Every structure is written in C-alpha cells, then in structure tokens.
Image (cartoon, rainbow, N blue to C red; front, side):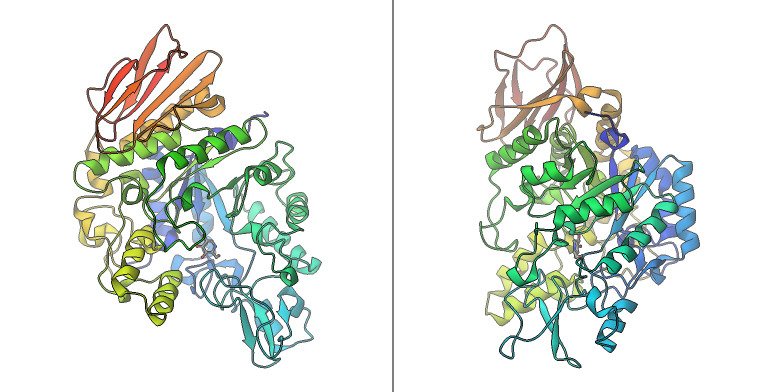
Length: 545
Ligand code: NOJ
C-alpha cells in the first residue's frame, strides 16, 4: 500500500466553542486555540480537526452554516483564522476543516432566496416537495426527532431537513449547487488547509422519493466528482462521517486508488451499548466480546485495501472513560490509559477529542435547563410528552447526551477551569479542580503523558502503522489482547477491560527470542508476557523479536 502522510499522523479534534475563550465572553474562540498550540505540540499531535468555525446562527453549534466564506462572530475573524493557519504551520501542525454540505443554515442566503422566490435558481438548491393529501410528502424523519419535512407557509410546499428545521438539506442533484460547493472547498484548500472532515457525507447521495437517505444510489459518483473537482490531486486528508457504513462500502470510500476519500469514520462500535433497533437513548450494557469482534472485523477487512480511522470520542459522543472505563477514584486514570492503549495500537489514524487526553468525564446537571444541545433538548421534550419517567430520561442524558463532550475544556483549577473569566456558555464540569491540564502536566503519571507516549510510539515504530493485526482469544470475557506484526517485529497488546483480576497466558504459537515491556499503566508490570496476573484495567505493550 502506498504510504501517505496521514498513515502516521495523529489527529486532535477541537470543538472551538468549548476549547479556550480568549476574550472572556464565555465562548471559546480562534485566538484561544492559537494560545494552546504549544500545548498540542507538546502532546505530539500532527493535525487539528476544527469543528465548524464558519458563520452560523448556532442552532446546532455551527453545523448550521450561513456563510462558508466567513467566520462565526463569536469565534473571531478571517484574519484570526489566517493567523491560526500560520501559527499552526509554524509548529508543523496541519488543520482540517469541517465540511458541512449535506445542509446549510436556513439563514444562508441561498435558502433565504429559495423561500422568498419560488422561481429563483436557488429553489432547486434545496429539496422542496408538494404536500401529500394535505400532509408531509412522506415518512422521512429528522435525526433530531419528528418529521424531516417543514411546511413553507408562502408556497405551501415542504422542504426537507434531516436535522433541525434550521438545517435545510441541499439538493445534490443540482450541478450549479455542486459547483458552488466545490468552489468553496477550493477557496479553503487555497488557504492552505490540510483537508476536510466531511459531516454526514453518506447522506448526499439520497433518493428522497424512495425514502433512501444514507448510502444512496448517487453517493460514490458524487464523491468521485468532488474528489476530481477539489482535493483529488492535492495530497489532502479527507475523512467522511459515515454512520451506516459497512466494510465493503468503506473499501469503496478509502480504496488505495485515491479517487474517493482517505478514510471514513465507522460507528459500529459506538452502538454497542444501546438496545438493538432502538435509539441511542435506549441503554444496554456494552457487549465487550462484540466490541472486540467489531474492531477486529474492521482491522481485517480493510487490511491492504482501505484505511481505518480510530476513535472513541468526538463532540457527539459521551466521554469514553465514563462510558466504557471507570471514572471513579483511582480507576479513572488507569482505565483511561487502558482505553487509549487498545485503540492507539490498532492500525489506522487515531483521533483524540479535546479533553480525552486528560481523562475528562461525563457531566450530570440536575436541571434540564443546564443542557444546551438541540438533540438532547428535543428528546427530553418528546419523551416527557410521551409520558416517560423523568428520571429515566435524565439517566439517558447522563449516559449519552452530546453535552457530555461539550462542557468546557478544563485547563486549570482556576475559576471555570481556566476556560473563561466570563460566564461559560455551558456549565463547566464540577470536577475541574481535580481533572485539568495543569494538573496533568505536573503529574508524570497522568493520562496526558500516556497519550503522549502512545503518539511517540506510533512515530517510532512502523509496525504500529503498517503491521498486520491479529486478535488473541477473541471470546475472552475481560481481556483484550492482540498482536501487530511487521518484518519479524511483533507488538503484543494485553489489556484487562474490567476492575477484576484476570490471568493472561500467552498462546503457544507466539514465539519470541527477545522481549521488552514498552508501556504500561502500572509501575511494576511483568517484564515478560507468558503468564500475567492482570490488575484492574492493566494495559501492557510488549515488543517481541
Ligand atoms: C454530525 C455532526 O457531528 C453533528 O454534531 C451534527 O449535529 C450533525 N452532523 C448535523 O450536521
């Protein structure tokens, strides 16, 4: 497989609204990000994925864009953006922009024109349909609850919004609209960005009349066209957000010909703690064996013919240490490091979400008033109306709300965790006095230094980047272990996923002459892996030659 720069890169996702506030208006901003670049350099990441910073009325925190050529007022100006690119570049850090082109904001000038004038050329940039028997055109539902159709009073037609009413879907069948999007992408490419994270890109090939949204019939033709018209010959990292992707589809997206994307985010592991066939709010215990099977399947399927992205967290997901680790007491650090180890030693490009590197946790606000996320608030209202028990609803929110990931980054034990001296747009997690960057930098044993070590290891060992992956004893109920191998060098990963003691025995078919313990989350771990009594959340990496 041809080597690419993103094969050995580690990406760090910034959610600007919650990262660092430089002007004390309670909202993070671009100058705040610039002030933390040295911190990110110290961590060792190569690329920043910036969640949307474009002009937006913020119905969905920037995923509703009203001007792709301008910066959100609260975040700063285009000059600040240029400075961020320059300052990042000075430190050898690349910037990925979030590309949100399944929909715009309803305040985008195209949509305003489309609504104002039925005959305007912008009408067909969106998806309008006549009512069916006086009601919505079909049964499509919004990802944020309710029908995906909203009536436009003036024309008595409905427009499609797969997300909020203020996020009308673009019509990807319209070539003029596509051309305008490609021009906009080229504008950003010319500014020197390193690529795009593509928001719900699997929805753009939809066939509305057949009620097909994800993986629609036109999807790959459109992505190939976008590739040709914009980033295709520019050596850029492109990662698609693709919820319904299967390994076969991922091979199309990330095939080594490079005529589509560099890689996609697959979410199969992310649904393993919900009741099958229901929503993310319907909670189930994680099926740990299934988790290993899912990861192992993706590792095997894309071997040599695609590329994985590796992640536990993003701005839509709960904090991994609270979700599948243990955020109580001494186990927080141990389990955060264990989770990092099993992810970062896999094959693919790892993504770290802000705060993950210091083991930030989920949050529990007593009052629904303290939640800001549109998805959470819509679900709360919908379930209250349907008569669900309020405690059950709040429990789902504590476990799954997107706001778990969106509380301000905890920099120090100062007021508001050092995020702002103003009033933060969303409450800071109360544990900021114990869990913060200052503390993590001081403590040589912190989660931060474990992430840093994992990033370094990846840089120094091709086996982590290009080696094969083989899971050991996949049906074991508590241990996750696997071997990466390249040119006679093996990396053995052994991790106890739970808080009970477990015994690991190295399978007889794994031989070695020399063995070195490379990284552990305990101080005094076994130097050889043949028979190990694993303590709670113990995670070990051995090099075997
Ligand atoms: C996926 C984004 O990650 C999420 O935050 C957003 O709400 C939807 N796409 C709609 O843009």
